[in-house]
Amino acid sequence: QVQLVESGGDLVQPGGSLRLSCAASGINFSFYTMGWYRQAPGKQRELVAARSSGGSTNYADFVKGRFTISRDNAKNTVYLQMNSLSSEDTAVYYCKANQVRLGREYWGQGTQVTVSS
Image (cartoon, rainbow, N blue to C red; front, side, top):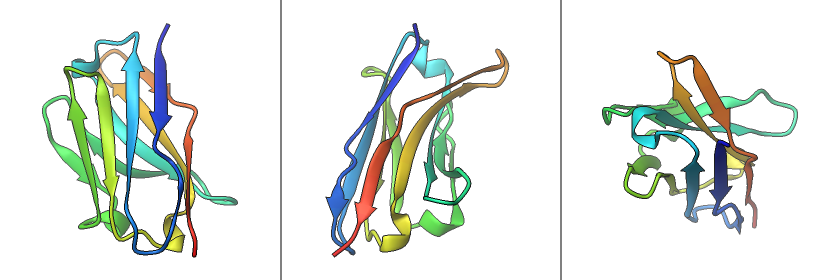
């Protein structure tokens, strides 16, 4: 059974930082592209950042220079370090594991990030 479990979401003040974690089980983690997405109320889910099995990264323009995605294949975990948070970053953040060649895609249940004073 595949599980992606996000953690680290919290209430933080503007300008603050958070680190999200996503622990995967039931997949060959090192072969998957791991990504973070977010969905704010009334908006579509959007890509935040992704890191391939080969180490290449892709960031949404709105997080470049503020967020960093990393992964630890030994721990089957992907991280999202978020700095300089603003109220516009408030959303539920989801982790996704994607293996295009196998046509497999899995989502976590999400973790809430709220940026507010």
